[in-house]
Length: 306
Image 1 (tube, helix red, strand yellow):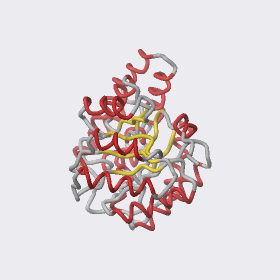
Image 2 (image 1 turned 90 degrees about the vertical axis):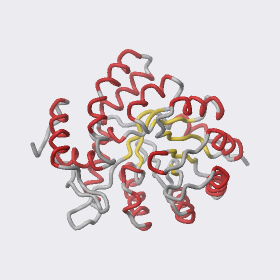
Image 3 (image 1 turned 60 degrees about the horizontal axis):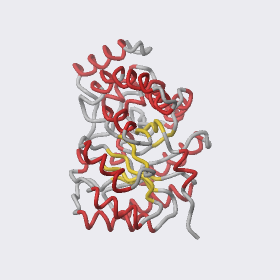
Image 4 (image 1 turned 60 degrees about the vertical axis):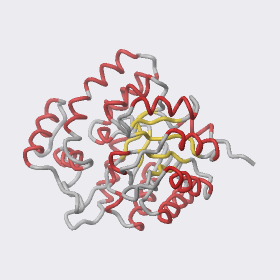
């Protein structure tokens, strides 16, 4: 019997925050801080939570750690908002294992990235995603981020996948090609869930029929990002547009270095985490940290370490 995905498609809307993975000085995952970050998100109106995506440094985590982060996060969220962990990897078998883990623990959907570094062709990408989707019943959100994977999932490939795999219900497009994202909805259907992973396109994607965004900026200012979506869904286009422009300066500074380094620096200044990334990633330069601090002050964000 076919699985009905209409309920999760109706609930999976708005600002889905890709929560970072906080580390202690010795490199261990700081689950206490992570729990606090999730509670911070929920207290500020975030509509959904994702972990172990790009902002969660998945390539710096072991397979076991990724599973631990998923299980822990699901427990903290406790059904209050949809939970969509990132389960993709450059390794096909790891992707299969993590996606099955997400289904097993009861996640609402799994976000599966285009494999990075390998640069598979479109035929191979089709086989990869179809094999993963066919192995589970959990809804799949494909994650297309050409700037990090060095390969773009073509609209034709995505359209064929959505036709052949009923549980592929959406895509996160971290894609600056706005013509491409328009054609996603044209080819995959207007009810296909389109999420923006490009901060400056979060509002424009709503305008063409997008379902929401997965924005790293929401780690720092979740209330404003959620409010922009709420305004749009409430029909207050002018307020949504105003918030879009209001967020631009913060968006810009948080991407002057590779994500999530600036976001982690900002959260550390806010006293929410320790400023640690696992090598080969590291914190931003002192100059950029000063710029981040000045920007946070402009937004009247309370800083514990001024």
